[in-house]
Image (cartoon, rainbow, N blue to C red; front, side, top):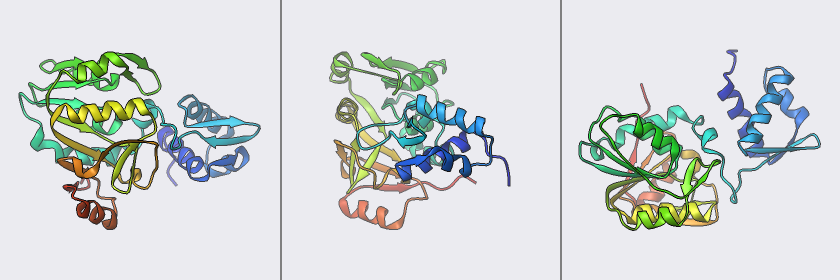
Length: 259
């Protein structure tokens, strides 16, 4: 059996705890073929990223309907799956296009695939996307201000909201923390508000989401999937989910797996 990479190992540990809710550390040590010291380091990093919390020999999931994992952690998850979505955005990305991007790792992955396209204007509150866009010489970059949230790697607050009310982009690219009954939700009210305002500030709205987000729950409504011009899903999304979205009125595109 091939040795797992650090990201693969941490993803396995995180998914196990998230699925179980609370588990004993001794059970986790049996889960992965790695030394106890390595696993303890993994758990420590997952705790720093607010994926789990440890107490008295037990590990409990933090990510619930009330919370979101860190951007740092999300950037390492489902990387190959997120990469498959990028090709479906090609019709919306050309020289002179302005794009509003939310703070999602999925949108980061989509945008990363188009750094060869010149003359884009990127508007975002997310610092990972800011760094990506800022490194492309002929892209214009507009940053939405506010208080920097280290956990989400993004700015939030009244100043950013005012900026969003004053711009009009060609396209908004957003993702979702949770989709339930055809509606996009997020655990944090401020983030849900930002996403909703981004959709209102764009002529065309596009949702990029992996199949893992369906069936999850969160508190704050962002938008109905039928409100988007396109909903881009990965090939791992089950037929029943796709059919339900289309019956709801959503325009669904299913990305092809990478060769």
